[in-house]
Length: 329
Image (cartoon, rainbow, N blue to C red; front, side, top):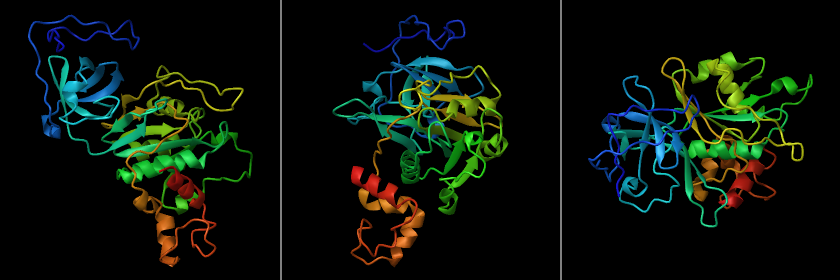
């Protein structure tokens, strides 16, 4: 049966907790739309996802409303393998507290859902103006492999990306910065200390007025950065590193869209241990590494850009990341 909801009932939340209260059901049915809508047909943006429900920030400055949806009715006429038909950042059409349609996406950040033999696709966020890839200088150590995977995912979707290296206060004086080559590769780079606020004013200017998603490995300080940027100590939970692995523990459990200054919308996402690329063409992968692509012009036509002795890419900072990602596609 299709969900029936009372369109006169106001949205309620359980005493400040992000736990939706069960709704009553009305007598009339709400028809859903099996096609993707134009952005002009939407009237809200998905702010958070729950099982078969989503919190939607409606146009016109209204408070967020908890809305129901059905997987089958929002499949848009195709056999979608996405874990959910909507994700944070999606523009949708809401009628009587039911999501009846999803608007066309400008872009989307996708990954394979973990722990599945036949992986479903998980849309992390959609309609982004900027992807902020957050890494840490220490605790955990800087991990170029996952950073490059996020940068490739952004490049493949034509999403501008920015690398934010947090916890720079933990560096010893004169310590080598193993990420300095990213600025030479044309990637925007900012160094921060979320606890003391160093570098956060620079970051704030770069993301002001934009819909930006903060992504990265667990424990790098994404939520701490957003707390500092928004000046809201109540937002999210901050975890500690695992003693056994030295890695971060998951504290943010789902993506959340947060309103910022100057019509900004900033998305906090869960820490990811292993980011599996989706929809990246193996033949076009090199184009997502601009500095490697430029250097490849000096290679022989039959060069595979692997271990060839005369390959112009050998010795370049991101050559190994390129080879690792190529081997995984």
